[in-house]
Each structure stands twice: as C-alpha cells, then as structure tokens.
Image (cartoon, rainbow, N blue to C red):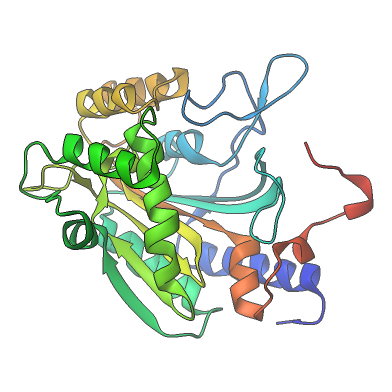
Amino acid sequence: MNVESPLVCLAELVQSLRTTLWSRGFVELPTALIHEHDACPAFQRVRLDDGRFLKESGGLALRCNLAYASRIFEIASCARRDPVDHEHLQQFTMLDLYEAGATLEDAIQLCRELVTSFYKGPVATCSVAEHVKANLGVDLVNDQDSEAKLKIALSRRYQKQNATLYSLVNVYMTREIQPLSQGQLVIVSDVPRAAESAGRQTPNAVATARIAEFQIDGMEVAQLIEDEPDPDSYLERARAHGHHGPEVDTVVQYIRDGSIPSCSAGFGIGLERLAMVATGRKDIRAFMPSQDFIREL
C-alpha cells in the first residue's frame, strides 16, 4: 500500500476491498445519491436548494437492494454536515454491506477479516452493557426499567436534562467507550438498543440490541447490525428514539410484502478512517479529495 500518497493509498484500499467482496459472491449495487426525504429527526442530511437531500450512507436504501441479490455492497461518496476536523470530513467514502440470512456474528467475522487485512494492531472486546453496569449501576440485560434509569444517570452525568436517550447514549459511547480503543481495535458489543432502532432486540435482554462497533485509536471505524426482523418492533423503537421517517416506512413495507428478507445483517466502514489507521496518519483531512474545489458546508 502506498503510504506516501494518502489518496493513492485510499484508492488501493478501495480496490482491494472491492476485489475481495466480488470474489466472495457479493454484488455491488448502487443506491441513490439524491434522496427525496431527510433521514429522520435525530439525524439530518445535507439539504439541497430544491428541497431534496444528499445521502449520508447506503443504509436503508441498500437494505432494500436485497430484493435483487442476497449478498450486496456499495462503495460510494457520502455527505454530512459534521464540522471538519482531524476525524471528520463532510465528503467521505463508505463501504456499506448487507447479507440476507446473516447474523451479527457473521457480520463481525467478515468485517474483522476486512479491517485486519489493513490494520495490524492488537484486537480486544468490550461489552457496553457490562461497562454501564460497572460504572452506572444500570443493568441493561435484566432490569425492566433500565432504559429510564440509564437516561436519568446519563442526564445527570453530562448535565443534559432535556436530551434524548439516543443522544445521551451517543455521548457515552464517544466519551467513555471510544477512548478504550487507543492503540488497538476494540470490537464493541451489547450496545444499548436506543443507539440504533433497526438493530434486532437481543434475545433475553431488556435494553440491548444486536449491534456492534469497531473502534480503533479512539475512533469508530465500522458499525455493524443484525436487523430487527419484526417490522412492528422496528417501527415502535424508531418512533420512540426519533429515527422514524418515510424511508423507514419503505423498508417496513418491503419486509411485510416479502420483497426483502426480514432477517439480514451488515455493516458500514468509513474508508478514510480505515486508511488512517492502516497508515498511522492522525488527520483524516489528508484523504480529502480535490481540496481546491470544495469548501465546508
């Protein structure tokens, strides 16, 4: 891999991932660059002057492509309004992937193979549920009132009395969990279900979902999910946590009419971040393309 030129390095990484996935039977199917609707109240896309929106990931649109093939992926440019800093770009490259009938464990295994083909550091694991219980005294597995207790505990901890549980969990993940990954890849599991409404409810657990993260050097590099197969449960949680929107309704309709399988799993990898940890660079802005032709949103 060309470590001297960040953009060439990123190009080589993309080509390697694309070749590997095609060789394993995954089909590259694109999703729309421009969307009719915003993502959801909790997460807003970049809005165009005509009222349409730029995609921030393949996400739900890619899941709907399971109607055409059982193993699918997309490598594409995406846009967000995050302030540009050493870990964030407003235009970036995502690998999004879904597999029909797969489990979270299947997704973790494949994602680990892909990530560790570039990142050669040590690998560890972390259970967010265990971390929360040890540090906040909230049992997300067995306590029926654990989500209410978690919201109270995090509101007090971060002095955010009016924040949603979704936003509070994101703060906890950023401040408490991500720093554990300095100098290593940490595979984070047992994540609170409020973090992602589309994640399958963990069997025999009250408030965790079948979602995971790959964190390296204090950054989230990949997010993984086993999809909630029950459309009613998906809708209920999406509405409760500010994740509901027209695109969720579309996915639910596809599941109900049998257009796509109810059981699937997948992940998204931020490729500039993966290139960062693969080359040891500390500033993602080195991978920003056409810098003389763009400006911050």
